[in-house]
Every structure is written in C-alpha cells, then in structure tokens.
Image (cartoon, rainbow, N blue to C red; front, side, top):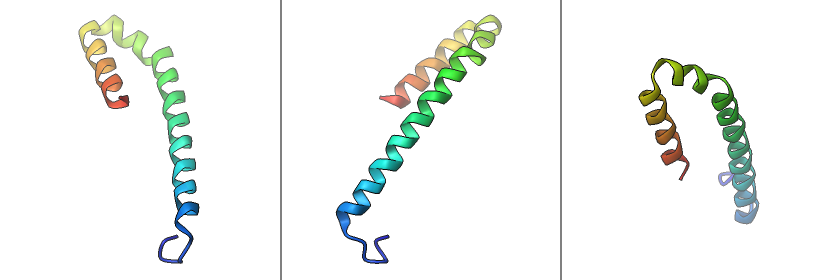
Length: 61
C-alpha cells in the first residue's frame, strides 16, 4: 500500500483491522486450547501444563 502511495491514515486503519482480527483469532484459539488440550495435559503433566499456561499468559501481556 505504501508503494502504491496510499494515504498513511488508511494504511494505519488497515493495520488496526488486521490486529483486531488476529486478537480475535488468538482468543478463540486459547479458548479451544483451554477447553480441550489443557485438560489432558493437566492429567499427564500438571507442572508442564502450568508452565505452558504461564508462557502463553506472558506472551499475551
């Protein structure tokens, strides 16, 4: 878009739209992960599951 000379605020708006979409996808993926994978992981390796969740939490902040 920059190479095509699109006005900067329009590019910024597109970037914000993409960021919003990615945030929504991330939220859905995390919800699915917590609903399925984490339960199994807690049964197999509680300490590993907690470490994984903390890692995800730290990446989100």
